[in-house]
Image (cartoon, rainbow, N blue to C red; front, side, top):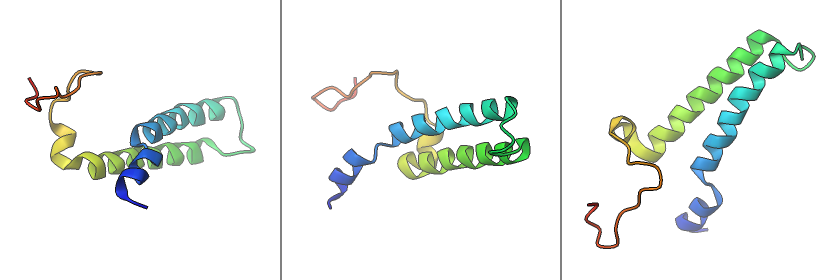
Length: 85
């Protein structure tokens, strides 16, 4: 399988959205006393690991310098001439 096909299947933005949903849902479940699934301490550990996973994904995708540079506005695309203006 070539790299482009793998990128089409594995969209990091989709993965980020799934992780964001889990980061929100897990503490909420803990608040409603779902202690049969996990305790508050386990929920905190899960959320910490998911946050670390997001940072690692960003570091792999954008590089360390890409994580600190100003981001383009949402929906912005490079023009066809490639100038970026």
